[in-house]
Length: 180
Image (cartoon, rainbow, N blue to C red; front, side, top):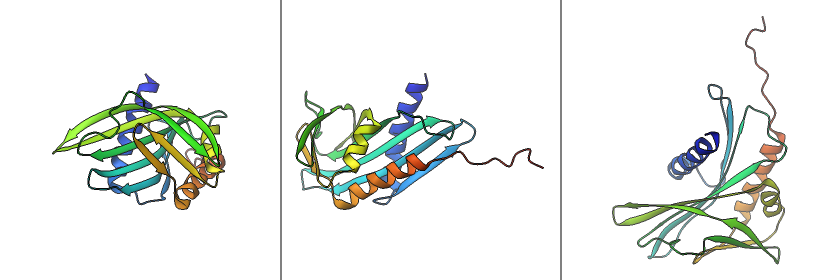
């Protein structure tokens, strides 16, 4: 049940961030009612050519409480907007070249939503935090999913590093409740 809630939360956050997050923004939010911390970052956002309207990459991690787990799993979210569905293919593996090293990062799980003559695709890939750390420590990162190829900008890689640092330095807040 918690996994389904995290998946729904991650997709909702990606849609929400599509409208409100500025490029490079990293956010850490703690929901004290659900006792869940979520860290999100927009790591790439680009208008494309006439055929593809936009491509956006987010990274999200959610965990119970305020203290990060030792071996987290992060979710990479890819949102595309196109006339015909950019990722409608049988091969939704995310392949990467990180500083010249070829790697397979995993397989996306897509959700396509038609909207006013456009197909908006929200795809997510869950991967170990160590894979994100490898991306964050790189100088050059290129990825391919289906027919989409993307090279992360220096600013996008800096945002990944900021996300990693925020996660690694996240500490529970001291509560003032009952401390009179």
